[in-house]
Image (cartoon, rainbow, N blue to C red; front, top):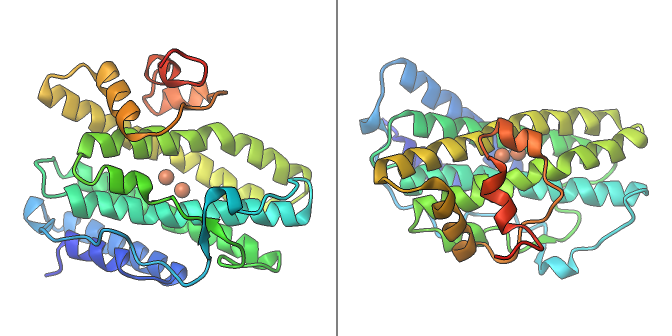
Length: 272
Ligand SMILES: [Fe+2]
Ligand SMILES: [Fe+2]
């Protein structure tokens, strides 16, 4: 029987975006079946995920300063924006499977695996929704250069599950909650209905990804008898370069289990 870790490694070592996300979806469905049949910890298995996930030959990965910026009001600007979102979603697929493969052997209740498999499955859907929009606009994922530094957060927290939870779902994915409403507005003004619908699906589901992060972070704090707020601040200062950028989506962050005293002290202008 294929273990969950083996399934995760198959996704991580698949390079093509559409193939990777199809595999991610199929493996998530298989895991749900296995769980319904009574699979538990023994089905997680152990394995060695690759240091870096396989990626397609295109897009070319460049320093973020060299990712072309175009006016958000132009069709090219909207394509560039969606291309950046597709790149983030593909990276997120790998981040969630890496969470399972790298940390799944630690002593967690099975809900830990269920949550990250669910998140990976949703990121796969997000990638495909955005790719469909790009293709309908005459472009595709790979047509433009993309940010080379996306795997940095994973590399920096390879040995630290609490650091990984703090930086990936609770900082990076929470940032998505802050910026997505503005993006939806840009596409709404342009009459781009498909892109608005895709971004609304993403916006709704990303709240749960941040919530999974907060839930498992608090679980580990509770088990280790650690005070969650200063522990979070220490980890973000250690692993995340730079300050968090306001304005924050206070309401959605609260829905996801992130109270203001978690992020305000790390914000630009606060005395870090
Ligand atoms: Fe996503
Ligand atoms: Fe996400």
